[in-house]
Length: 246
Image (cartoon, rainbow, N blue to C red):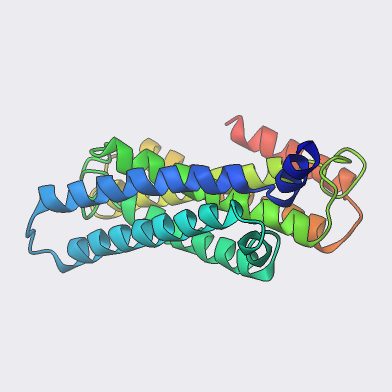
């Protein structure tokens, strides 16, 4: 009995991630339907398109996660999803889905989760869409670790060292860059708040872009090569530390 349980656990390293994404998609789906009902027939074609995209994305994720979670409970069906290329493809698709969803949700021009002033008007939709994106990225990272046989137990000595941290920073940098860009469009292009505010917003865009590039470079090198570029990580990490201090 013990051996079976341990074997099932080792064959399902991302089961918790799939469950978390299932919960996030459920909340986002409900919040998207609520936002669509509250907006009613707004007459804005772009807003209605964003509402449909949010509902479709959350619905697809909900259905996929439910199916995958059920497949984990059967030793035969789990062979088709756990650690296979199918799982990797689904992880990639979901990461792309949620990236698009976050871009739609965080757009204050159409009032899905953020109003015209940039304030959050639908907390469940806004925050859980970001949580879903981070979970999807973490899920994809976990699959890549398994697919490229990166040893998690030997995190300090192998190329997997700090891979999760850099992946989390990648997601955070995308958030900073996307939010800053959205604020800049609304408060510095369409309307002008002030020089100091717009300068700080440009700084946020720049830091987000630099952080995204740095994280992508490190994550790509850790996945594609077995040698962890410790010195380069240290230099890039120090640059990011100094930059974000401002």
